[in-house]
Image 1 (cartoon, rainbow, N blue to C red):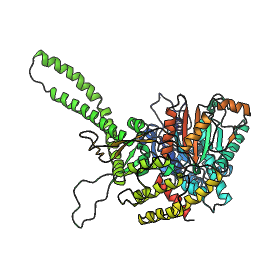
Image 2 (image 1 turned 180 degrees about the vertical axis):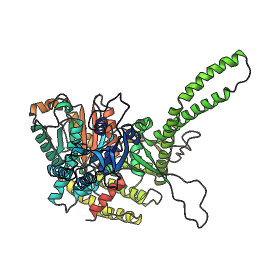
Image 3 (image 1 turned 45 degrees about the vertical axis):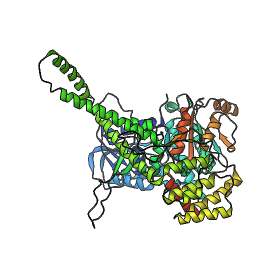
Image 4 (image 1 turned 135 degrees about the vertical axis):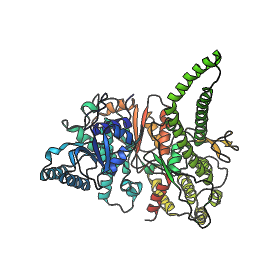
Length: 627
């Protein structure tokens, strides 16, 4: 199977850290070196390489570019930074200060001729030309979070956010700059992937602007045969391979309900209710039951961070599972671990056998072998214990939010709204219930109702809802924007279809899931998910399966291929990339993962300009509604 984007980006980083030469497998000797990065470089490296892996590659120090750094005159330095004015000035300053023995300059994105000349001038002035050993454009300006998921940036993401693209007072030059930033990152993505895509996108929105610019940039690069980044090793069978990926560009405005939706799968829930970014989750540790003395300052809660990586088998297996299944799986893992631990303890006690009869001696030798085996598996057992503790803490924190905010009720109700099913209680009751969720939960629920309803509520009904929301403490700014958006999309296109109901209630959990369980699930609904396609997945399905496309008129850029060749490729699409301009979320990602699982031999990647949870998206909608 072809390498994933995570493997390709990791391989590119390892090559860079080995002075842009392929890492040698059999050598244990590595040259000691310093890694200098900016915030962008740090965000790209941190989800892919751990500190231990960096150390194994000879990185003794990794420092931010814009910090006070002491000279280390006999060590080579590898720089991994964006080609900005600020960064090039600092590199010139480092050259003048003679900080390192030699300089390997790696730019995340392509550096302009003028900035390169500035560095050359500084190197000449500092008499350090021989020390600048290599200058490379790495084309790595995107962040890979999963084997099949990437985002464009984490730093300065507000510059390409949904809010930035949809501001009513945006001027053309700002819009051009946003589109150029997105296109630059997507171009880097395809260079790293080593593939020229077939681009499809809806007409008349930001996604089409990105498609036009990306198409132009790819054409220009392919035309320049000597300097093309898509020929030679990267392309394998060449640019006209019949296995070119389909690249579907979607606009966030296509579906505003999904990012606001309360979710029920593990990864998406963590992103929704906890502090989770770049594969690291922070959890507030629960304090002991002892209360603070009267009048004393309350104890500050400790925050603990955990990395949820590809090496964590439990995470890989369960990140897309419904939460009750995850809680059950954590408990099973814990029980298995305890059984293994008890076996080691039992063997230890047996080793103190007395008496010299043959039975005891044979039993002793048998148990010695068992104990040796148990001791050799101890590191594995300790790692298993660490992962169990991690997921116990994270799942407990998520469960606390589910119970205190009644997230199971919200999830089930929203699924019914989105699939036009019969509702068992009125929306007004949930909004008015002081115990049901936070102010933000109520606002999210109402916005989903407003977005997904075929006919907007009457003025009288709307006033009634507004009053209930204000009484509950909600800020209605986001509703003002959604009203404008709905009026506009009504003129422009048909509303998104969310498919049939995706949830099946299996009754309430009784007291606990099983005796001795860590997770008291009393009162939480045991909801089972049913596969249904979200609007973005539905567009992809129409294109991959060559169905008629009722969602919107799509424009195609097939990059210098004649129409008949394009239709031939279209019938044979095995690999697709879905990219959402304006931001994405783990709910859509998981929906695409489930869609791919059901289709043998197909691979789908999900990307977005920024990754936000519902609270962050609500904030952007509110800012737009205040304008």
